[in-house]
Image 1: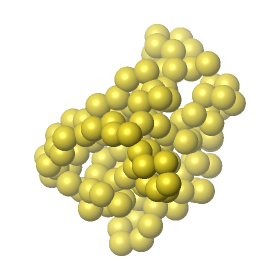
Image 2: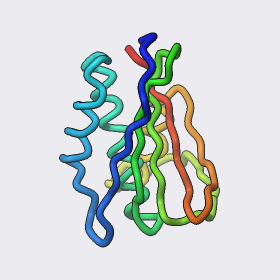
Image 3: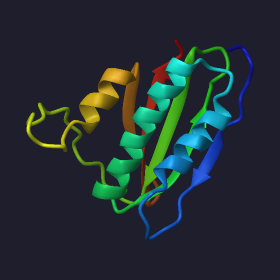
Image 4: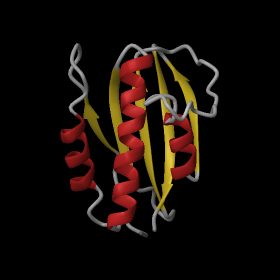
Length: 131
């Protein structure tokens, strides 16, 4: 993991649902140096962040993934088109609902995560431990 990785970005087409299968394949190509379990966790977490941005934040703009040099984590950043920082809460999901588990899942998979305001956008980021 001591290798420096440049950050790589996936840009999303506007006006359509994110192509999640393509996103997962894109992640697998870029994360070939980490183990299968880490890739699976990264795919799950990224799918959740991308879906949240699409459904709740006026669409996903860009996804970035990197393996920071000297750290045993995969860093995922998802930009959405809503710069306003809504309070993020990890609420207890209604067990009968198919929705509402997203941030609890992000919190369970990642070492840490957060939200950053940017010009005209918001970035939700998470760091997944390399197993």
